[in-house]
Length: 144
Image 1 (cartoon, rainbow, N blue to C red):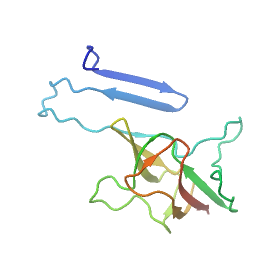
Image 2: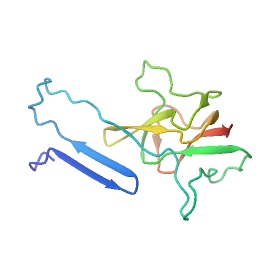
Image 3: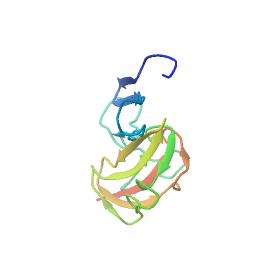
């Protein structure tokens, strides 16, 4: 973007929206830029057509009434909005379909990940600050 006159780029495809902005130095805030947040789906839908449901993690036994929240993208997993803040969720917490469960940073964009279903967090499967892959299991949730 520095080599061209582009200051903003946005693309939207199959439920994923990516927006990249470059500070032109004329923002009047001393060169500081706000880190944008974006909400993305919290689980990877199955490859076949049909209703959207969370799938059990590969290589793990399917537990009755337990769904897995998977990473919708490659990035860095953060359990809270800042190092000083408490985690969005921890084991034993009750969540609703619109609860934010974590943030995944991808290309300097902080993406809030919603649960998309209700239940109780049974297990957190990843540590704060770890790199995650697309489709990697993040949480086990017992449906209520």
